[in-house]
Image (tube, rainbow, N blue to C red; front, side):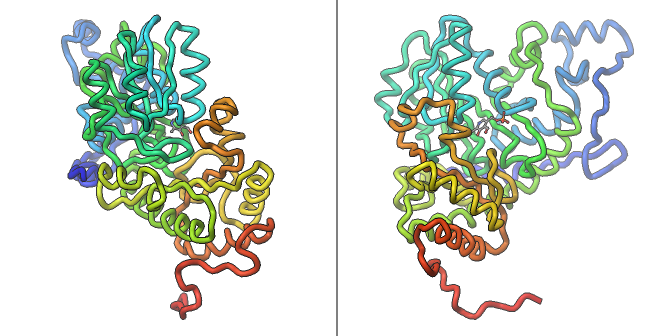
Length: 419
Ligand code: PLP
């Protein structure tokens, strides 16, 4: 088990606002004054650091959030971006040039898959997609043109757990980088501690947690973050996906409750996963003994945060999945919407939304059925009631349990009156 405690690192660091406010002041400027042109020139020439030039490069609000994320991931440095996709594309474009190759897991977010499969070949950067669980296949796919191995710690949408120490060994034996998307599992895993070189996040999801903005982050070495922001050659600086400073300030405030939210997401998801499995459904959740990487996750996870807030339920065919999702929205289980990590429950059918970029045959090969319903479990205070609602929805579309729903926890025992 990893001994690193990202929660305490985030909280141990105190910053103050301009007038001693408990939150850092928000930067409301795109550009910054200098007392002399010489200082400005010295900044351009990398001779001095620590002052701000222009907000696409750095601004104080983005720096506060970046520093907090670096501490959370145990990284030397971090940089926030305008989206998770910007974090991924900046990282790849900084590391790869025409003629280079990437070895990527085939079970990744559909947008990342489309970037690797459809867009990057236009720049002469090719990707070999592999079953990331098959370490021999990963090793075999790496050649002298390969610059990086890309995977998600917990994959989207099948929730496979990547063996990061083993993948790190392969990458480092070939002197290439292991880039890990930790969007599904912040706090749960510390990929840099486990062998990754660079961690990317879509902050849009659990880290922000309020589904009110799109943002991303890259965490890695000081050297790499400097490269990204180099005024002459940095992908972040030159492609320009800068996060707005007001958003950075609001995400920073939400970040401080992430550890508590992850515990509750996990507790609720574990409860639903166990009970749905008990009813005979095929449930993908790494906290279940039946999950193929349950033992691996136990070995690699940071203790205390559970197994995450995502689960996938196989309803076997598209029509059944659609009927269930419509019913669950009507019965206030949550929203039929893409994305994840919101305080309310969100569900969608990946084959027809977030993974639709992946061709049907490839989805079949990776075990992603058309009836898969991906559920991001919310922070419901009464998860037994949520389970009862789901059971009611299942019954209403003609599925188990019919006619009465019996969750594993004994709902008949007297419950405390709410006062
Ligand atoms: N990585 C994962 C695992 C995702 O699920 C997503 C979006 O759903 C992204 C990256 C892209 O993030 P964003 O939408 O913030 O660009």
